[in-house]
Amino acid sequence: MGMCLSGDVRGGKQAVGGAQGRPTEAHNNNNNAGGGDAHDDAVDFFFRSRGLQALFTRIELSLSASKLRDRDITSKSDLMAVVYAKKREGTLEEIGRTEVITNSLNPAWIVKVSIAYQFEIFQPLVFHVYDVDTKYHNVPVKMLKLNEQDFLGEATCFLSEIVTKQNRTSTLNLHDKRTGVSRNLGTLSIHAEETVASRSAVEISFHCSHLANVDLFSKSDPFLRISRIVESGDSVPICKTEVINDNLNPNWRPITLSMQQCGCKENPLIIECFDFNTSGNHVLLGKIQKSMVDLQKLPQEQSGANFVLPSAHHNHEKVLKNQLFVDKYIEKEQYTFLDYISSGFELNFMVAVDFTASNGNPQNPNSLHYIDPSGRLNSYQQTIMEVGEVIQFYDSDRRFPAWGFGGNPFNGTVSHCFNLNGMPNGSEVRELDLLFFL
Image (tube, helix red, strand yellow):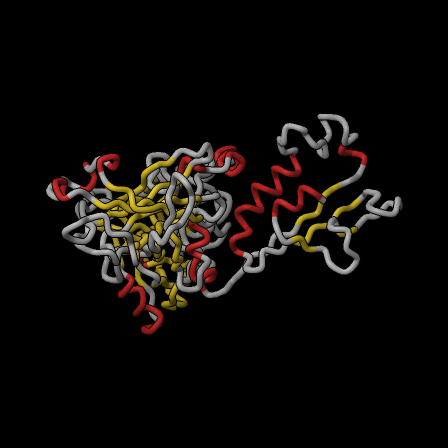
């Protein structure tokens, strides 16, 4: 049997690609449709410093409005909505427009606006509603100049406020963006829906028997790599198991593959078994082409599938005695983070502040407890605000427990656990900003 080396199966010994908790996408720097530039600096630095990219899930916003003001004389308004992401410095970045609905004061727009939802990011949104002048009806929506249309009203909210609603729908009053006053301008309803191609997933367990021993002083260290065949005929890796050391009859931990990864149950998959080498030049022990439909039958038939290996002549494949077995094949539905949130799952934000002398004299500008007269936040305040302003929307009562330790709270005696609000029977404060005045 000839030894086939593979130099493109990089990575360590751990499993990769399987058992994904939720269908997410790697955040791409080119993808700015969704306020990607509104990253908190600390979060951005955390990911970049570890060579990681942030994860997001794609959300589609459906918009409708009711009781809008009529600006037209002979007919009703011709309505369009525009959605913006508000950046940290206050500027607006347009992320989408609806179509124009003619002669209506209660539009339900069909065109949805896509946005990248990131739990760890503060994502303020701004919505503008316009009455489009009749002379522009043949102009593509994206080409419309907004300053030439009649502005009907503005609404603002945070994306997290929408997705935390039980039905993921938030209804907002429209107001005048210049005065901030709402004078019966109507309401705007926003419904958020997660765009998941498929929630179906398969939990599957593999084991192999009688693998070839290609190591000189020990047995092979096998792992599996699963790839999907795409339309061009090329294969795209979607998952690999962990490496099992020194074993010719390995049993791997279960992996979970989503149908989004596989394409569909009938799509052909390539399952390759390699002997791991630290150099990255892993030795191919055999491969099999099977679909999910084929793999589902193996545990029922209680039989294995023989690996094959390309021959030296490359005209045919040699069938090996090595076999792949499927011990478990369970189809299930994957629930996403937003499924839990919209079903009533909540997150609580609790604060503990260090008051020990290691923080330095509070009168010294270098102290972590220094209160800057200019209003600039110290390190503790920045941390509380950057974390708390994200978490607060996932807590229905907006009450935050806050404690201190290592200080002289109220009676001059050092305490290692005291309520920052000074109350003996409760540690909660009602607003995030109130933590700065304790």
